[in-house]
Structure formats: C-alpha cells, structure tokens
Image (tube, rainbow, N blue to C red; front, side, top):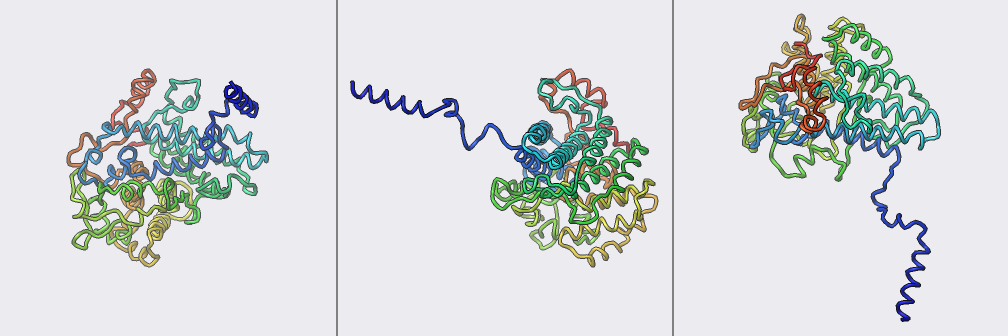
Length: 474
C-alpha cells in the first residue's frame, strides 16, 4: 500500500511541475516554427542545389546539351524523362522547397524584424529569389500555376499564360528593387549568396531583368528593349565581384551536390561529352583542362551522345568541379556580358559594342576557370572565335561561345541553346524523342489537377517535349 501511495505522490509531483503536458511531445531538435531567415537560407540552398545538381532524378540538362554523357545507364542521355519522374521532381523542388519556403519567409519577416528598412530589404530579396525560381519553371514547362500556385485554399491551381507570367516577373523585379535601401541591413550571414549586401542584390535584380527580357526578345522586341535598357541604366553585373554564388561547405550535408553525386557516391556514371570536348579541342580552348581531366592516352576525349562509354577510357569531370566546396552559380558577369552583346545586336541601347561585350564575356569566363587575360587574348584572336567573323551570324557566334561558357550550368545552357539554336546539336544515338525543347507536365498534375492540366496543354500546343514555348521562335 505504501508503495502505491509513494508512486502516486511521485507522479503527482511530476505532473505539478509540468505546466503544459502537450510540450512533452515537442522535439527540441525539430522545432515546429523557424525564424524567417532560416526559410531564406534553405530556399537559397535548394535553388542552388537544383541548378547545380547532376543527379539523374533531377537535373539532366548537362546530358541534353551534350556537355556530359553517361557511361552504362544511358536512358537520360537519350531523353527518357519518365522513368525517374524527372519532370515531377523538378516541379516539386521549385514549388515546395524554394517558392514555398520563400513564401514562409515573407510571411514571418514582418513578425521577426522591427526595423522598417531592414524588413523591406528582406522582403525584396525573398521576392527576387521567387522571381528567379518562376523563371526556370516557365522556361521549362510553359504555362504553369502562378497566381494561385502558393495559395493553400486553391488545391487545384489554374495555369497562367507563360507570356503574361514573364511580363509580370519583370514588373515584380521593378517593384522589389524600388523598395531596397542600400544603406540598411538585410539578412546578414543568413544570406549565403551575398551576405546581406543590398547593393549586390540590386545588381542581381537588374541582371535577372536583362536575362528575362532577352529570353522574350524574339517574341516581343519592344517590351524587351524597354526592359533591357532600364535594367542596364539601373546597373547590372560589371565584374566577378557581382557574381551570384552559393558557397558550399567542406562537410555534408551542405556540400557541392556534384561532389555528392560523383565522389561521395563512388559511382562512375558520368564522363565528358564528345560534343563539348571536340569543340574545345578544335578551338584550342584554354578552359579544356579546367573542365575535364586527360584520358587514358594523355589527351582529351568524351563519350558519344546517348551511347555507353567505358569510364576509364575517356576524360572525366575536373576535380575543380567535383570539389565539395565548389560554389553553385546562379548568375555571373560572363553571362551578363553575353546578354549585352546580344542586346547590342538587337539594336538595344546598352553602350559599348557587340564585340566588346563578347570579348569581355569570354575573358571573364576564362579567368573564372583559372585562365589568364593573356590566354583569353590569344583565344579571341583565332578566326574561329574572333567576333570580326560574326557579321550577319551573331546568333551562331554568341550561341556557340555561350554554350561553352555555360559548362556546368546545364539548365541555363539548355535555355540559351533553344533561343540561339546554336550549336547545331544532333539527337542522341538512341533517342526516345527529339531533343527536348520543354519538359512535359508532372504526372501528378495530369492525375490530380486534370482540368487545369488539359487547358494548359491545349493552350501551349500540346504536352510534348517537341512543343516550342512562346519565346522559342526559331
């Protein structure tokens, strides 16, 4: 009897010390709520990850543009998007892990931040990243859920017209940039890309605007011209110091995704693509040894598009790229200079000349890949590279060099390849379709959001990889 009474007293004492029994179920290592800056940091990482990844479940753009090739499992090199549900996975990551996290950050910022200017800066940065995420969705699929996409009360969101979305993204960039106060703080070290530097975020916003405007330039030259010229006037990237980079760490789980895919996994799934290697060799490109290793014969070679290749026989991805700390690139000055060269050729007022911007773009790329100005000058003097040989065919000249400079940025290379139609890529040897110019909508959208999916498919022409999007005119 005494034992029972004692047990009751002990239990009562324990309960009396616990004001809220429900807290006993809380896991302190997995909080139910997080500060706004945590959502921002995670969204930056997830956006960088999906752009940088070489995982065949997510990012196969290096294979599509023939920068890399697979060794034994060649389904993705031959454009099989369905077996691994690649189009579903990209959709989920951008909507769920990037856009939704940024939405949560924007919701919490007014509660977490007292200073009005800091609050505005943080909201603007989250908005800029949302715009950039939508840009990749629109250029990949076409019409997408947009105005209703993050509304939990709309489980079956409508699909908005891609052309209208692109125009609205430019409007959103302008609005967000106008609220940034450069003499006030933002996210500080929680912002991995720029460390809270609002002046750099402004340049990033203007550079995205330049990029979006030139993506739609073949469809709406007047709108593109206005957007390009206002972006350049406001200030775009001018040096490598402006580059939007996500710095990875040396230890998991925050390492370079390529290190995870190629080194940590100990898999030999990827080699250099012969299409890229052969062009680099033809032009005696100084970046070749920074892109790839030598092959078993001491030279450089790659796997043929869509064909199995013995891993040991050909060149591999450079250790520079597979290093755990190799940063992810969201945008860089080389890309911006190529955009300015293109803008000049289109008759837009951006200053300089097509040649000067083209030369700056190539030089910036070579230097970024551990080259020198001297190497860049020698390279630019070659007839096959010099812009003096470009009159009347600027699309080919800029398109080819941009394809080279976008090595390891396969998603952007794929977008630019569709715009320029250069280089003239041949389909993989065992291709299951034409080279994709868009990705099909996710299967889950076809099953769950059926009516809106069907309307969107009809609106863009058909839900096929061969359906060109509104901006892809040639």
